[in-house]
Amino acid sequence: NAGVTQTPKFQVLKTGQSMTLQCAQDMNHNSMYWYRQDPGMGLRLIYYSASEGTTDKGEVPNGYNVSRLNKREFSLRLESAAPSQTSVYFCASRLPREATAGNEKLFFGSGTQLSVL
Amino acid sequence: AQSVAQPEDQVNVAEGNPLTVKCTYSVSGNPYLFWYVQYPNRGLQFLLKYITGDNLVKGSYGFEAEFNKSQTSFHLKKPSALVSDSALYFCAVRDALGSSNTGKLIFGQGTTLQVKP
Image (cartoon, rainbow over all chains, first blue to last red; front, side, top):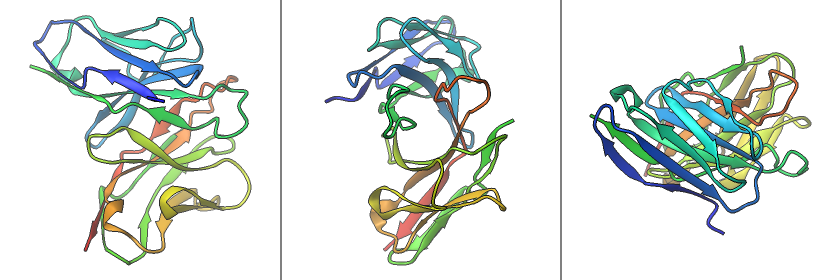
């Protein structure tokens, strides 16, 4: 199994450009998450999707939109990139709520390093 | 508000010595606590969790963590450090606010562990 796959791995944007970060998981997980990682600040939740067809804001949603395209895929879109969005972005997924073993464990992708100039 | 704090940006230990990475938490209700590790250019990997039960929790790669309710701490420990343990470690608490279990995690700032030969 590939687990959680993120594309692209690296991206450089100019201020004002748009782009979509892709995430897919092949573990039949219901819940998916987008986090950003910044030095000294840990990981902060941008958006999450508890199940297919639902999305909710996390701690830092401004400037982002998401789409839960189907159970496997959860994309993050920057409509007009800003230098403050320079970060490493991680997608994660989680077992269904009804799972009794390890249902709190998140599985992470390898990240997308985004620079906005 | 739920939060976790990792008071040390970096911990340095010699190979073979015991290591401790500190974490304190603030939650309303029962804490659901986690440790994750991040190796360079990789996503986070689950190490261990505390939900209920024994205060000493054992996890992957020989790591363990001690839950201390009176001190609101959840320190990560290993009896004998390896050079390969060098990585970035994150403590996290489940965001239990609200009636639904969304699986959202709140992460600490991260602690870099450097194990020297």
